[in-house]
Image 1 (cartoon, rainbow, N blue to C red):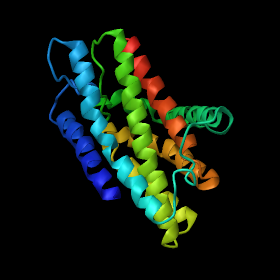
Image 2: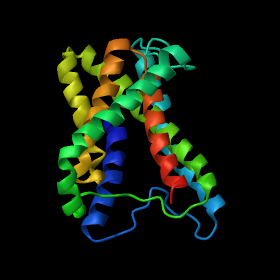
Image 3: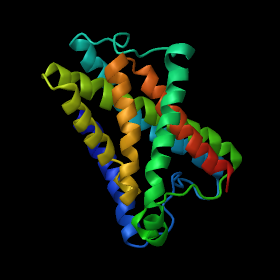
Length: 226
């Protein structure tokens, strides 16, 4: 199951990395499906990206067969106090930690900008915020259900220690963000907070909320500030 999710994700990460190395300057977060028709492009783009979440029902089904129901995994309608507010704290902690880590590397990234892949949004209408929110929601649910809900649960069943499972989870999560280039290391704090949250509280809703808020803020800002 993890491989079914990981292989397409790795391919999607490697392609922009190769494009960058070959001098492609415009690596867009919102690929153009129908040129010159932004609304149609947005709708079709969301539909295409929705296929990423196709593994979620299968993942939950496989987990249920071994006794891990959605409720036991902490997946369902989110609670403000148990999920959204803690998720906001996790997202803020991720931003803060990444910023602190980034400071000593700033000179390197400034003088060797080619080491960093910067996918762009391009000039799109402000209503593409809907696109940003949809992508953020699909990504958050899919990634946390597979990497936290499925992988960590199966590793625990196989007798892995929480620390070993955490390390493998970080390796998996980091691998499909290869398109960041050298900035790949910035994914580690985020992955750490998401994984430890699930290990400690067994609530998928919480890392899903944090992941959604994290991505939605960044993508919304990218759309509105052009």
